Length: 262
Image 1 (cartoon, helix red, strand yellow):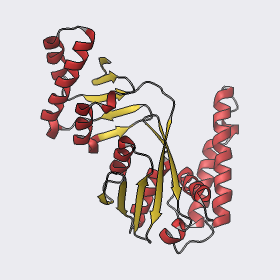
Image 2 (cartoon, rainbow, N blue to C red; image 1 turned 30 degrees about the vertical axis):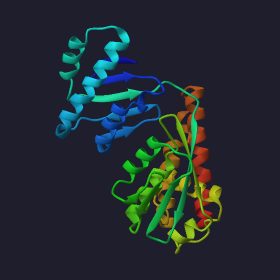
Image 3 (cartoon, helix red, strand yellow; image 1 turned 180 degrees about the horizontal axis):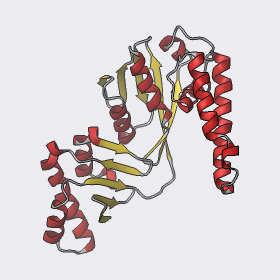
Image 4 (cartoon, rainbow, N blue to C red; image 1 turned 90 degrees about the vertical axis):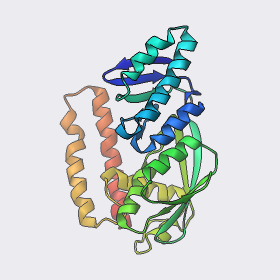
């Protein structure tokens, strides 16, 4: 483990098992609502109402760090406590991505059950945080959410569009009637997890909720096509040109699919 103070933040470069430490998990559970989940770690923003818990965490961090590196604990304890209002970023070293299987089932237009087919507390924390205002109840491997409003459905779609967090790859699957139950007044979605998955991803490309009007889709397409057209970047490096070419291809693919389904 390595601890660095930089840019008014505490950077902790840990091992793959760092997040499994009980004192780490306790800290994050207490600060879950001001935590950002990154692809390779976690960023905890400052919360003035939780300074006592922050100090306990910093003391534990000091003990672990100084013991591992044979350093003076009192010096580092004082140094870290001076930074108790700083953000904390835990970085996990690269490792082969681990797949986490998650199944979604719609009871109807207003309630969805999210089931973890493989145990993963951190992806569970991520989804609970992203959907915090929608959670009705939960168990060790399931989350029940209320999606009775369009804004709630849009929040769910946004959360489902992110597939990588903390070196985990989230694989979502859906029952064949998921779309018809949740969006019963829309047609043309197709059945099967792959078709449903594509529809959610395609809407995310345009940052539009499922069921948006065709004219809204057309207007958004024109805006993004102008922004990402490769001709705008012909003077840039080949890497930049390729990046925007791929973006433009995905945009065209998404637009054609959603226009056909509307």
